[in-house]
Amino acid sequence: MKKNLLWPTEIYSFKNNTVNNTEILNLILQKEETEESRSISNIGGWQSSEDLLFESSFHEVKTFLFQCTDMLKKELYEDDAKFSLLQSWANVNRNGDYNMGHIHGNSHWSCVYYVTETYTSPLYFVDPRIRMGMDSSHYLLKNKYFNTLGSKKNMPGDVIFFPSWLEHGVSKNSTNNPRISIACNFSLGK
View 1 (cartoon, rainbow, N blue to C red):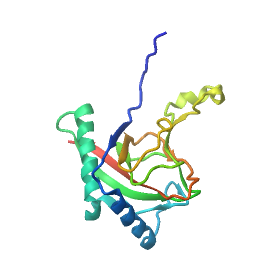
View 2 (cartoon, rainbow, N blue to C red):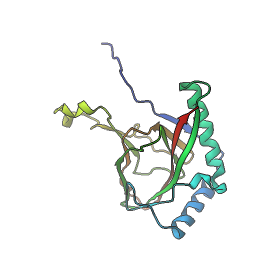
View 3 (tube, one colour):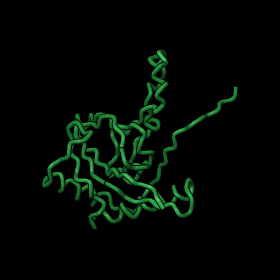
View 4 (cartoon, one colour):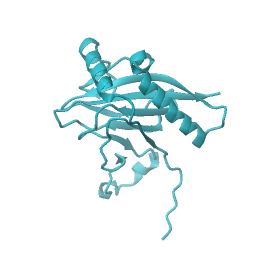
């Protein structure tokens, strides 16, 4: 048997071991105490304003993410392509909190940087093939139209880049540990 893949969705993972995630965690928890939450896709939980990585306190994370976009550019795009950071925000999901499935419009790439591990609430992706919904045998599938990139927990310093059009969400946190991440949207141009 030969298996062919047509139109695969590329998702990239990177790891950083130099950012002080404990310091980043404390900065985000301070913001959670003093700033009102946005309510976009989050059910419960807290989201910061969209300019997090434009603050100097988060320059290490921003620098690392641009190193990642440089690698994506070398892999996928012409030499004169340029990534621009559009938005970035922190997410804090406590016990019972989650993020509904959604996409990020008006951008090309999105990413999630993990400040803490994911515990029981991984990022999941929804199958983007519209016509796949016509298959009435979906209830028999081992993986019911979403993918959490396996059972691996993401750890502090992990980052996942994915196309902004790919529907994604965050599973419910069933632990007493806060699940903390930084999400970003990037655009491409010349």
